[in-house]
Length: 175
Image (cartoon, rainbow, N blue to C red; front, side, top):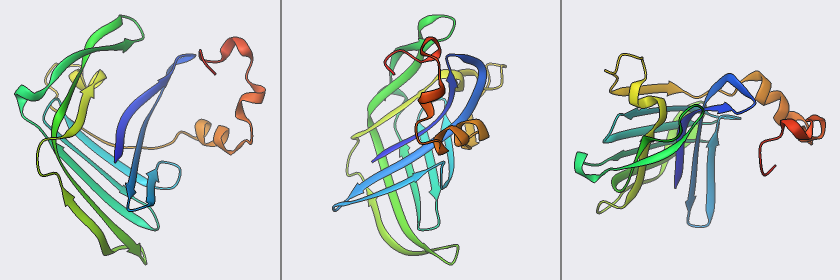
């Protein structure tokens, strides 16, 4: 299972951000993918200890929930636009995870594919970035966002080779 909800920005367009999300599930030889290109993704995270991401496409619906205790997290440094590596992230490999997946028929949740729960604390969880101070008051404890692909990015993904028109000096390192 891989699930992510985040606000991403582009290095070259620092004022441009978008909320993104993805759920990828490998189960018994099948891959179920819910992403913002063709699915509704809603994710919710607390400053520490609770995570939930829900995805809905025409074919599937998934809900992933994770939790861990306050003592389970380790502060980490992560890259920032203006401070270099800063302690704005917290990770743990002690998350307790529940994963549910259903078929969808006629626009509704239908037959369950599975409902699984970890038997211990073994899920990798993370929180970081602006969630540490979502509303600028220092009092934020929860972030709930519906991921949405910007029209600009959607248009670029429709082009067979979107990088063909991008000048080399504008490309991110490694592209």
